[in-house]
Length: 94
Length: 380
Image 1: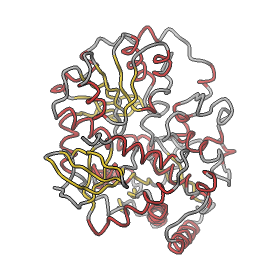
Image 2: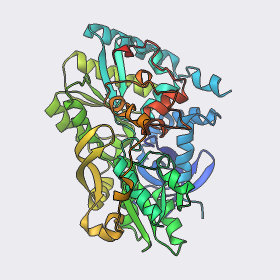
Image 3: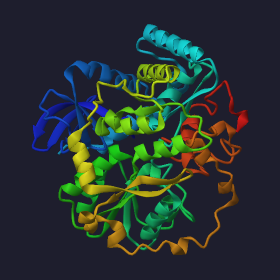
Image 4: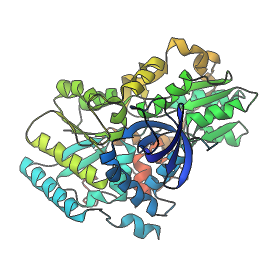
């Protein structure tokens, strides 16, 4: 639960952003993100809310863990399951 | 296939990992006694340590304990009872999947659901709110999680949730329980590894007062195997040098001040109150409850919750042998529990630590049962 999941902002519509999570597009809320975000930014998300705009210089390092974990297709992997859960926690793309 | 994937050591930068492991070994050696015990308070840290097999490269003398870092596990029986009582009164409950099988005094929510009560699993408070909007009946979101998750609950309440939506808060606040663990007479904890994303919200500054009071160092760390190794190396350095300080080893996500906006949202909606954490103790300011301004969304005020009928029941004797509390306090480990992997398994859990995917027992069971091959646990 505390892992969160990073994604790339595609569009911003008021307090909702459409975010790409490793190929899956979902809506996340921007009510509590620390800085204004715009398309192209990466954000860290938890239970459907962006909680941090990831500084551009840190994006690659941040994504690495998730790419590695998602590459493991084991359904038993708790960390990978957590990341998929976080993606599911975001809003259905409308 | 899954075994090959999860047992392999897969560092992105093996050379850096080797250097980090060597540093850890050297510093722990310089401390010159054993065990050197440090505690982390995050299910995701334990999952990463287990998944990447990090305990195999920790120095022999270093003991890394998972503390009360699983919000589902520390949800106390009376809190589960409140949700069960509401469900039995015909109120629809939505909650995170991990909460379903956590034992209450008499029953879990899963038992109640099997008996016909309306219990829905959601992945987020937003989904619960959306579900409520589609229904003509009351929906109570049974909210668990630490401050990181409570912020989302708060943000939804500050929006305009539907009138049939309310919250039964079992949200917990981590900093106060660190005080409790540090003050336990049996504690061997010499330093804390704090969870990166909780600190993204609260900021690393939140630990400064704790460090000052208890003279124990706190290091904020991320979730990459390398982040964890780097965090531990920093932590044992601070232990070695007797420097009780806060160090932020996860600057790419955590600042000293944290996310001010999220903090405002959190404290606008919630107030900290004292309450029991399962197996641990009464934790002053450890529970997050809705402020008076949000009474209309507070299931505890909206409904008359009668849990007394669940209490004329003696829990099965097996539950008395559960040592979840000692495990979360860092006094015992799963391998010193006689139930672990025998009577207590994920499909038939005795204690909450075997239920949640963030529970120490569940994680150890998932990744092979005996994670600390050095097995120093005969002491327990």
